[in-house]
Image (cartoon, rainbow, N blue to C red; front, top):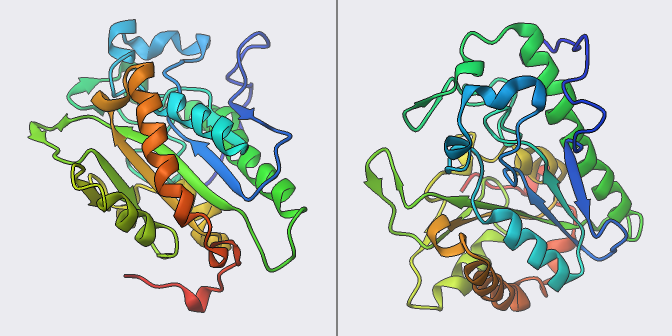
Length: 277
């Protein structure tokens, strides 16, 4: 593990939004929603990372539509949600601290000037001001939800993301993909339920695989703790409007209706029970 350095000064100013937002923070229940790439906001001290607003509004800056879907699901499920408050280009809260994509010097062919030659102090400031508070907020919400459950039970984690229809010149045929690593309890029935809609092309660990370092948040808070979890990727051109986000929220809710009724999802899974699939 890379050595952690303490930042000399906080990255965020006193008038700037926090590193995260908790939605429905008083809600109980057995589901916690997460959105790692909800925002394209950049701390004022970083001056837009040297990018224009147009560039930050592209898919490289955030997961377009993911926050909209997350908020709608939180309302519909009466579930809490934790969403990250700043752009993935500042620091990617869904990557391990050792991952080469934690702070990208270039994304989809676009150089990110403020990330090129970033100092250790600059890196530490982003971790301490944004990355650590976001994950601490997730841990706090999980602890709060577990207080209302028997010791052997735990909440389910659903992480909402979106992906661009074309990446590196390659078209992606999936409308939705479900990413997962060690625990099949939630992703396998969810994939099966979604595939009952023959109009959909549903990816299993597509367009990315959570087994290749693209699902750090759920690995840390889900698989690592024995909590059932799934990362949901929806194609951005389907949810880049409020109408699209509403429609896809409905598709997900229909799939969840049966899947989330399985009581075995809410049992803490022991390490020996996990599979590498």
